Picture 1 (cartoon, rainbow, N blue to C red):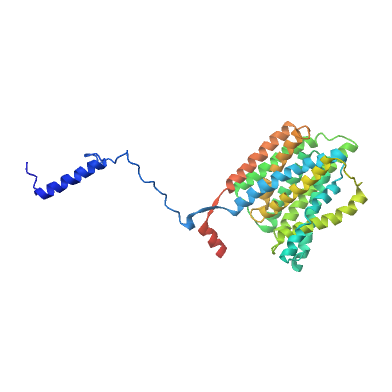
Picture 2: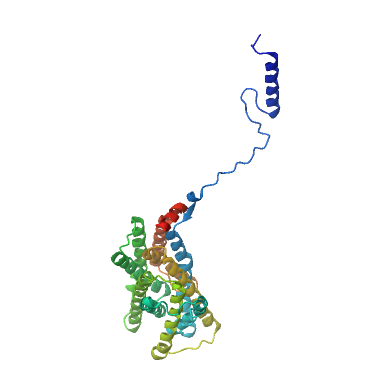
Length: 363
């Protein structure tokens, strides 16, 4: 049968078909040869303005959770262990913590910054430091007469509610529905933990001291929320090292005379007490730095809510280390707190485009 092709064209077509067959393709379906390795496909590189980065709120909440809440959860139980071992007073614990803040003076000297901060904001700097020292002093005094988990619960709950109210009234900062749900749920969990304990207060001196411990924990949370509000208004170079140093200086100068006037100094003679004092100082310093960084990135009410996980850590140590009773309401409240923190964290786990971040910086 004549196909209309010249002999030369027919020979060239046959040669091409033979070459294709040698390459392994099917003569009818043109299938590739699966016995030959295919070249690795490389995904196209995303342009720089399409890359995904964690948002500032996400960074702040993660730092508050991992660097602020987890170390802070150990402070209350360690403080109680030091008190049970050698009756170490709360002001003496505060003095030990302040000593770990004083080396920040060397950093400020090396950078050539004033130790007391710029003159125009010096008043607000000292106000923040005084509120912070008052908050820590109330917290240390509370854990000596109230279980560590309950004291941390009252302090964190009051700080969260007060911080949210201050942010709404003074800064006009709104929260999304998910954030409000997490904040209210976390506060509900704290109420579940505390209210059953308040109903079983004993009469007489013991009950009075217990009630005073809860009041001190509440005042500590209120002072903490006011201190965070003042801190967000401070913007100058070396702000964090300055505040850390002044906290140590003011706390030390105020606690030494108060220790001799209000309490009885105790010199521990056992390694456990000294270990607890050192652990409290180091963990408190780490938590202080992380929380101070977190409130500059995320809403202060959300930071305080994430810090509620400190209560869960304190309750675990209260049960497994201090061998103190943990009621079923404590476990239920801790579960509600963790669920609320999960809602806030999941809602804020967003990412920003690099181009959007640069555009925001330019504006």
